[in-house]
Image (cartoon, rainbow, N blue to C red; front, side):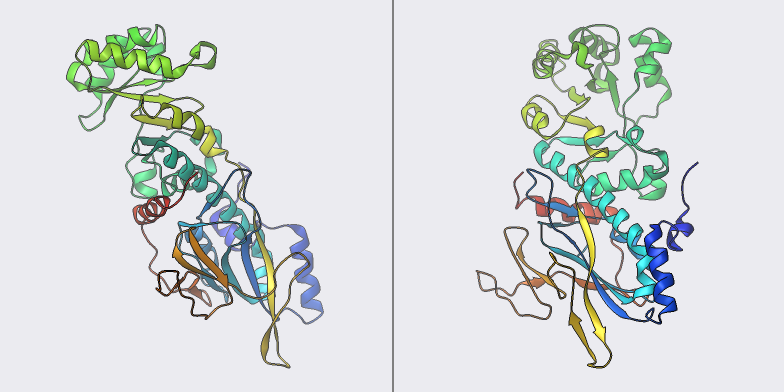
Amino acid sequence: MYILSADDIRKGLATDIYFIRSREILEKKGLCNTLVRYEIHTYGLPRGYKWAVYTGLEEVLYMLKGTNVTLYSLPEGTLFRDLYPLAIVEGKICDIIELETAILGILRFYTSVSTKAARIKKAAGDKQVIFFGLRVQHPAIAPALDRAAYIGGCDGVSGAFNEKTIGVKPKGTMPHALIIVFRDPVAAWKAFDEVMPPDVPRIALVDTFYDERVESLMAAQTLSDKLWGVRLDTPRSRRGDIKLIAEEVKWTLKLYGYENVKIVISGGVDEEQIANLRDVADVFGVGTSIAFPPSIDISMDIVEIFDERENRWIPITKRGKLPGSKQLYRCIPIVEDYIDTPNKSILCKDGREAVPMLDKVLDRGMITIDIPKVDEIRKYVLDQLKYVEL
């Protein structure tokens, strides 16, 4: 398996060769103890995106714990726009330089997945979104993938390990393989009902052998009041207009007295399709669009360097970047935010004082905050989504 362990990552082995070479040069030239401040920020969002969701902080804290590095950061789950400062990494250059690759990899991965999940959830409104996308990515990152999707707003994730990793009970339905092996959907549904404990929802997959309307009614008549929902995973070669198929299934179930059976739609759905389908569906199963989202372009650049002769921090950066440390002051998420230098007093339009969002979360390797639980971060994201539009 071509994977690195958590210990390997913490040791800085997940890095680019030019950082290792740079450290060697700095050591030989006596510059390793130079104090620097890196700013983690984004200078652009994917086309059509108005905001993103900052996630991955917990893993960055784990990676930096026990080092001599200090970290200031937005809370995990904070919504942001382009040009926003996300974090400040402070310390000796040789304590940081080999970790840049891993820090950015964690934050870009998590933020990209969580942002797409939040967009999907925003489009779904009060309808449930279940993430089914583990098969889309390398299995080594499955726990991180489910965590990122859940934080972003998904109502459930399917990984069997999630109770152990994030304390969330996994959700799922049934695969086509189960029905195919039985060669009969009715026999498969009955077997599922006989074997699974009562707390597992009876959601019948209804597109394996026959027309969706036919199989949905067969499932309802087979499981009766036990049937929680039917899942439409119709392949593209048979799909046509999935909304019309869902309406037909819904109408037929209602006609026969099964109006309480919920409609679950999966298979290649994204924000636009969900917005179109949410009046006929109760639950969306989403995989690829969340697991392989557009990338949020997060960068990490030196913005200040400590001058020992002058005994002060000097703003400095490469061309195209804004020098000096920055702070995000928040009044209303995304709607009214201000970016300025740290330690300012900024008033909101309504007279309140804006809240500085970047706080010290790691002090020379010591974590200075209580790490929030995944449900708390998810709630924080959903609360902010109320203020934004897609």
